[in-house]
Image (cartoon, rainbow, N blue to C red; front, side, top):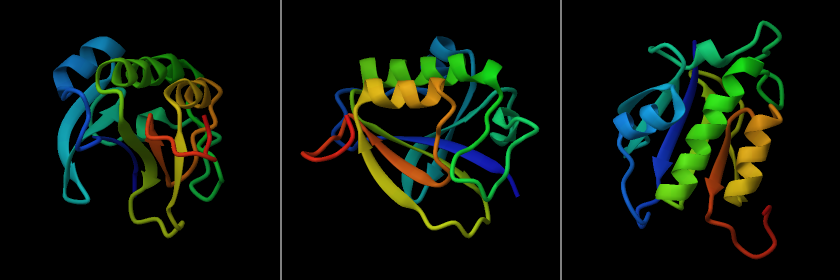
Length: 138
């Protein structure tokens, strides 16, 4: 079992973001993949799964992931680049094979970047970034 951090651009995003461009902007390893039938981008620090984001204190049953503090600026840079270029995207950090129910949250780009930098990324929370509806997180 592994952590997987996956970005999916909104179908009506203003532009597409390549794995190469996102890697260049963030310093992360970014790979193309298909996630739940949609073209997506998987993030890691050194290649492979996203487990290299996890700190030693991480618990796959916790409400929020405990990520390595030194990984947060790169993850935040990826979020900022996606917000700037694509405007609308989704992100989920989930445990492969885990049984935690997924929930969805609509959130503004600045709020999502702050959540990343504050090390408060939810476990199996699908963040719809830049796709806020009235009455949702900004």
